[in-house]
Structures are given as structure tokens and as C-alpha cells.
Image (cartoon, rainbow, N blue to C red; front, side, top):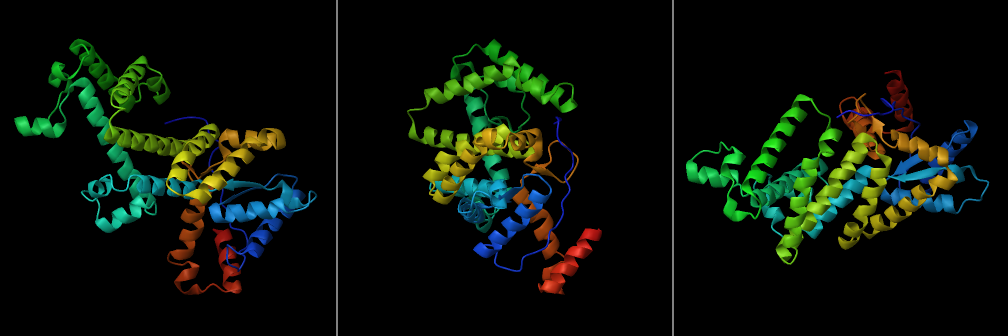
Length: 359
């Protein structure tokens, strides 16, 4: 996937504050350090916190006088931890639906517990995408009258499928010739995409995609009176939000980022993640106010700078708090890091930062 992006980012470690990160004094010291340096450089600082620290930092800034350097600080809610909270909300809302037993056919029971809570985020995202793909396959199987692979394998002893040869006109109200043409066109489009003959944008704008989406929407409309169907349709909607949020972070799409955070709010509230609902709503309001308060910062974020890229690729955007986990925390906890025998004293902190800066 190609597109315009700012390029590779640089990551620099600043001096460490030897205090509990959730301590108000620690947060205040961080804000003052950043605010004073930003004032000296005549720029607007942007800081990212996860939810608990975000709320404390926001209250500190709110209580500052108008002439304080802290008033210029713009706070952002960490996207990685927001994603974890949303995935945990999906697991909570789908509890008792059989999704846990379904996941345990692929993953170990202990792993599933961490996945449904949103802690094992990489596994959870992969698993949810697999389930969503399976559900979409079932819907398309019904729409186009094509038996699923396991059904054909049971009948013929092989799972080698040519979809156009298995259209069952009795299970659909659509003309079989139209279905066959759509399937052949979709197959040809997929081949062109894989070969790079057409772009993703051109494929998404094709009328064929609209036709398939329209058939799926009609199927969902015809099954909205069934409670079980509604549950799994809601699940697919949540996974679609998750997919679009990941796309927004990976591609640096600011408008899509805000829209997906807004779409998450009802599900976060329904799953009892009230602190994230409160913080996300305030975050959205503050980002919306950038149009009038800091238009230059808004333009900066819209140009793809709300994410960090560790590699010079378009699909490589990462949330700021995720980069902290991947770079700083990883370097501290792996071989040669401070938790591997060096100790966490003030002198060792300074030595480690100086050593890291030379690399």
C-alpha cells in the first residue's frame, strides 16, 4: 500500500524522573520541563499519555494560570492503550456468546483469557480478524449459494473449490449468471491486486465492491429480527471499527483516527470502560478545538505526524505510546538494559541515557 507520508521519525530519550509515573509531582515536572523548552523554541509541544496520566495532566494544565507555559501544551490520548481498552470491551460484550470456546479451538485457554481482556493485543487482533473473516464467508456463502469448504470436502473428499461451479440457485433469489459474473470479476480483481496491476484505491472505488457490499447490507437487513444474528452483526461492526482504527494509525490518517475514536464511545460505555469514555470524549473535543486554537498544529497532525514511523514505509505508522513500549521499555528490559543487572539508580540512569545517545 502506497501513499504520501512524512518519512521516518527519530526517537530520542530525555532525562528520566526518578519518581512514580502516576505521581502528580512527576507529571507536573514533565509538563514544566516540556513547556519551558517549547517556549524557548517558540513551538507548541504535543504530549501523549495513557488514560490515567492523561486525565491527571489535563487537570494540572486546567488549574494553571493563563500565562503559564503549560497552557500551550497539547495533550493526546495514547492510541495503543485505547485500542487495548476497546478490544477488552469487545471481549466483555461478547462474553457468553461462545466466542471464548471458539478461540480455544485455536489458542490455549490461558492465552484466550488475556486476549479477551485486551492484554495480549497482537493475538487478540489476529483472532478477531479471523472470526470476522469466517462470519463474512458464511454470509457470502449464503448470498451466492456457494457451499463452504468443509461442506464440499464432506461431499467430495476434496476442498479444491471453483466457486462459480458450486452456485446453488435454490438458496438465493439472484440470477445465477449474475452471480457467476460477479465471482469471476472479483477473482480477476484479486489477481490484479496481488500482481500490483491496480491500486487499492482503484479497487475500492470499483462498482463491483459496491454491488457486493449492497448484497451484504440487504442480507443483514433481512436478518435484523433475529437476536443471534444481531449479536454477531454488532460484533462485525466492532471489528470494522477496530480495523479502521488500525488503518488510521498505520497510514497516519488523522480524520479517520478521530472518527474511529468517536465510533468506539458507545461500545466503551456499554462495556463499562467509563474512564476511557470520559477521557476520549474530552480528547475529541480538544482535538476539534484545534481548528480555532492551534490551526498550525491541526495541519501538522493532518499531514500524518500524529503517528511515529520507525521505518521509511507508508504502512508503518505507530501510536506514540506503542513506540514507548517498543523502543524505551524494550531497551530497558532486554540484555544490556537497566533491569538486567545495572540497577535503577540516578547515576545508572544518566549513564544509560548517555550511552544510548551515542548509538
